[in-house]
Image (cartoon, rainbow, N blue to C red; front, side):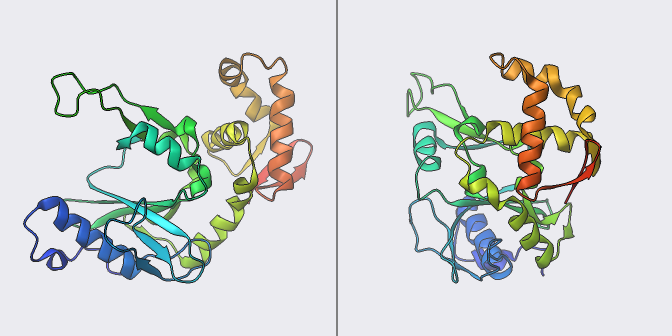
Length: 251
C-alpha cells in the first residue's frame, strides 16, 4: 500500500480543493476496500448525492472526508437539517475519514459504519450572521469523540497499516449495532469500557462512571443495574466475553 498521495493525479486542476479531492479519491479507490465484505471500491459519478464510492461486491456506499492536518474531536460538515435527514434515512452512507501531513503522507485513514451515526453525534452550529452571503444558514459538526473507538475501523493509524483480516474482524464484532433502534446506552457503555484502557475489567470498574451516567440520564434511578444490563447485552452480542465473578474481557 502506497502511503503518499500522488499529486500528479490532480494535474489539470487549478483549484486546490479540486486537486486534493481528486488525489485523495484516487488513493481511496486504489487502496481502500469495503470493511463489510472486502470488496473493491468504485467511484460514483460526479455530483452523486451523498456518495463518493460504492462497493463493487455488496453495493454499500461511502462518503469521503479528507483534510490536511489532525483529525480532531469534531469535523465541519454541511447543512444541519440535511445531515439529520441523511443519517435518519435508509440511504445514509458509511464514511471514510482521511488525514495527511505536509509531505502528503497519509497519517490516518478509517471508516465509520453508518449505524454509528445518530442525531446525538451531530452538533448544530450557530446560524451565519445577517451580513454573510448565506445569512441564516445553519451548518453542523460531526462529533467524532462521541463515537466509540470500536466504531472507527482504522486501515492506517498514526502511519501504521492495519491488516485486512483485522479490519473485517472488527467490523463483524460491531455489526450487531446496526439492528439496534436505541443506541445511546450501548455507545455510552462502550465509551466507559474504552476509558478503562484495559481488556479485562470488572463491573465495579464501570461503576466508577455511575455519577457521569447519572448526569446524562437523570430519570434513571438505578444506574448500576443499567450498567449490568448493557454489559450483559454486549456479552450476548459477542462484543465481550464473560470470565466469571463480574469480570469481562473485550474480544
